[in-house]
Amino acid sequence: MSTTAFDAIIIGAGAAGLFCAAQAGQRGLKVLLLDHSPRIAEKVRIAGGGRCNFTNRDLDPRAPQRHFVGENPNFCRSALARYTPAQFIALVDRHGIRWHEKHKGQLFCDDSSQQIIDLLLAECQAGGVTRWQPCSVQGVTHADGLYRIETQRGPVQAPQLVIATGGLSIPQLGATDFGYRIAEQFGLRLVAPRPALVPLTFGGEAWAPYAGLAGLALPVRMATGSKKSRMEFLEDLLFTHRGLSGPAVLQISSYWTPGAPLQIDLAPGVDAAEALQAAKRDSRKRVANELAALMPARLADAWAASDEALQRPINEAGDKALSRLAERISRWEITPSGSEGYKKAEVTAGGVDTRELSSQTLESKQPGLYFIGEVVDVTGWLGGYNFQWAWASAHACAQAL
Ligand code: FDA
Image (tube, rainbow, N blue to C red; front, side):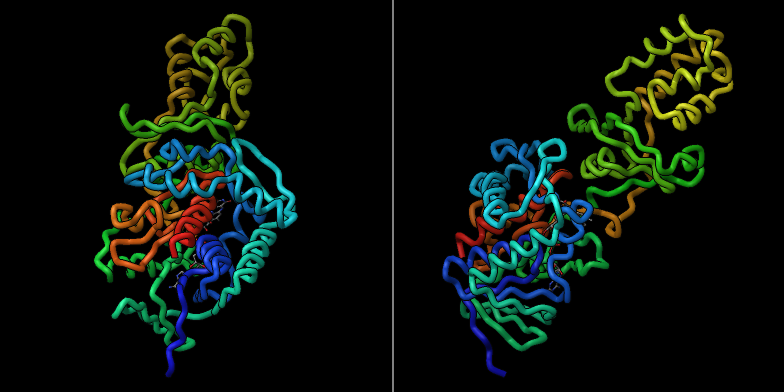
């Protein structure tokens, strides 16, 4: 079978692969983009509840460690500085896509994620990109400066190969460890992948008192880590049947290490001890009813029910019992037993070790082999940071191809 030649082959037609293919094609390169999945950019489609949180205006490329996790959070600085949220917003505007800001700089489509997919496809078309999909890859070899890819549609070759196959999250949407295997094949190190932006679970017995709270949501301050590595988020918490979810937990999960406790302030910004003492002076309502001024009534009931000494009007409650309660409200400490894993994780932390890559071009120490997007050990916070990394790393790579 004859081998078709391209200037660059990109494996993985998700956010990063599509954007890189479009930019390289528009620079005049003959580009092949291939993906084993029959459907295009599935993660863009489901992102942001179907409205794709496509970037974040608060991103500061000069301080990437504020919003990115990885062994070297500074690695992404160069790419993020050369392709900014403002540049992607300008592109979205050129395509006539209406958008809005939700909170904390998060930008969403007004209508549908499909508009971002259409934008990516139109940009690929403008670059004359050849897209083969579905098309599985059987193997990759490198000889005489050329990468030869054995595909379902026959062999292809190019001097440059870009791996944009993402991480392991949501295997039912086609996620595979392909990128990690290619890195290993060419002797490049990996940072052990792990689920991130993921709900956390809690052991059977220990969780029993809270299982009845499933569905309840409230704003909290959540922290983990030692004094030196402490991270905290002021976000919403959601109780589930198996544990905790919601933005506060998804964010903290990227920093959580197995066995470490979480500290949760259930009434952030309130001095719970002071509030309970003030209520004791002025009120004859039951403790649970007074507590409901600080948190949802269902949670207040559950917290008051945990202590016999609190089953009375607040003015009759002992100071010790009230201070125990205040401590549990402002510093509830609980240790997850695990996470919901890749099935529910929005992203995969870890991946191709950034020490193996150029921060300018995303080229690896293996000449002509590039890694972009989530497959790299760069993980953004919830809120559009991961797509901005996909766009920026794709752009940096495309300029170098
Ligand atoms: P991506 O996973 O998008 O694409 C990889 C592609 O490679 C896929 O098309 C896959 O089929 C293909 N592939 C894999 N293995 C292959 C193989 N062996 N052969 C050929 N092709 C292969 N981020 C954000 O910034 N804002 C948001 O709103 C959200 N929302 C969100 C919701 C949910 C439910 C999830 C799971 C994730 C998000 N994210 C997000 C994260 C975001 O979707 C993610 O970081 C990017 O899609 C990563 O882009 P990549 O192109 O690197 O991988």
